[in-house]
Length: 300
Image (cartoon, rainbow, N blue to C red; front, side, top):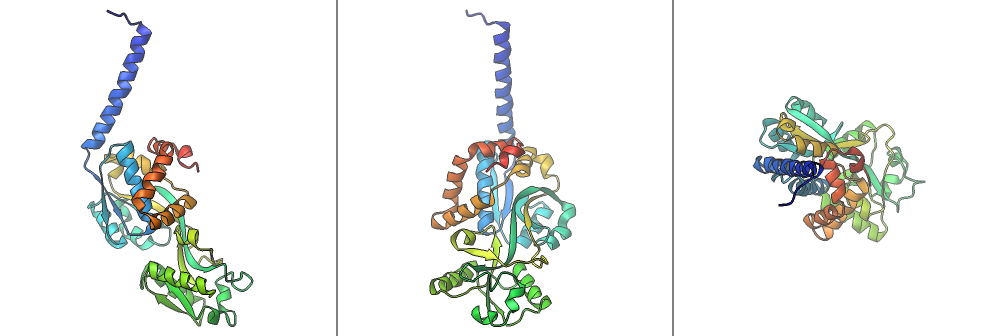
């Protein structure tokens, strides 16, 4: 029989305690119902949600169920407790109306990354001619854009805001040509190949800024709301039921350049593939987020 020193016994006991605590932690996560994460079929959201899914299932052994629907339905569902959280709430401007309506039933878990909306042009348009929204009213400029503003769906938040900006600033000679995200960018691509000017309703993060040489038009009056922050928002009581998931989302962040690159790569393969590769290459950083390490989680 081998005798153990008291110090060695203490070390063995400590390691055993850590192992039991870790096993207990994973058991608790596995025993929990799946975390129901709502998402909208936006390019940035798909990457952010699927990456969070991988982290939660790998690091915390926490089952996850993804639920896709339009943003208005998502807000209603999380407020009613039918889903647990939505990590794509744009504040303070874009989703303000939804936030104001349901905020008493919601928890703000934190900011994931920053975004922006506005009008953009490719670098084929000289800055000396068009650098700001005000420049759109210069003589002859509307004609160079064929009087068109390429935009995605009719009636979405940015479409309505653009209508208001055109009216309030008396920007004349333009009409919005609405189709879809892919239709809008197909028009941009076609014009670039022909050496023609384009004016588009853009938002970021988005792969369009990785693929095309685009710049936002200056908006000194913040008519399009300025910088936006994309929040993870949960139902009331979520942090109490899932404290470690809440802690992860409080520290979850993706550098904007990384996110836009992933979005572009996903078009060439799939979101699932690029997310798996990115997670494997950054596993330690995501482990730090799970453990509540804000400094490590913000490292590039």
